Image 1 (cartoon, rainbow, N blue to C red):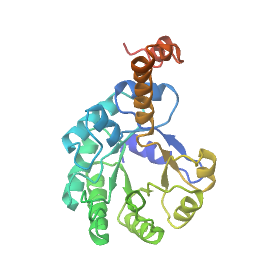
Image 2 (image 1 turned 90 degrees about the horizontal axis):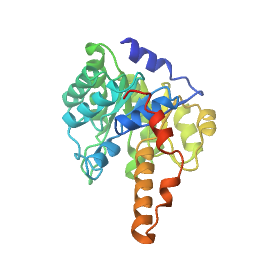
Image 3 (image 1 turned 120 degrees about the horizontal axis):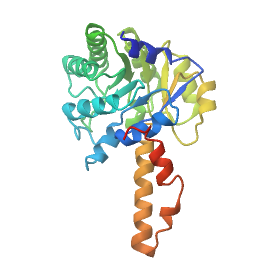
Image 4 (image 1 turned 120 degrees about the vertical axis):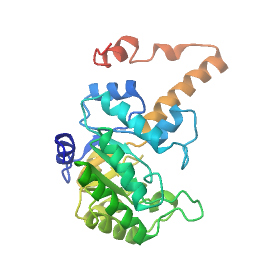
Length: 270
């Protein structure tokens, strides 16, 4: 592995998770770096929203996602993990090519989902899903190294099947994934059961009702926020706009942090 990807992997300690937020542009990248987070990740939803698109499969192309990830990586000294959706194609070679481009873009890591983009059959069949992870892992090795996170998406698509999710995660680990991730786990008992059933570092998606302390106690090694911060920023924008449109006032402009504080968080880069 490269020095940056090796350093990123070493942050993953079971029971001592670091929080990895997801900026959506250079400004949010610099703010989060200034606030002391040890690593960052891109967000496919945040990117789609910044482009004025709905967050849906295929809303962002591989070229757009890689170019965006490169901008984020170049804007920070921190390791950056790329949210690269389902690898931008159905085949193992599609995933491999995406990983090769991720390494070239300077990413320390990336994640690959086992999703198809087909609402009727949203989850990639087991054997093909494993082949895709194996191809991604081999591409990462040949390209010089990258922390590969393999995602089992069952719970996000209404398939609350912990046994199949655990089966997939363990197979992904055997295929070469460095980190495992099953987004959509909403209760701490399920989080604990999944983590205890696998032998790789596990990333947990932040969710209302969960806390950093509880996720740490369950044995996670990483906590990501997905689109949460991008949504919080847009929620603030909508609230401020509603105040102006509906009440004709501008009290939102007095909220803290204000202009000087936000400007200071940009690390003085001009």
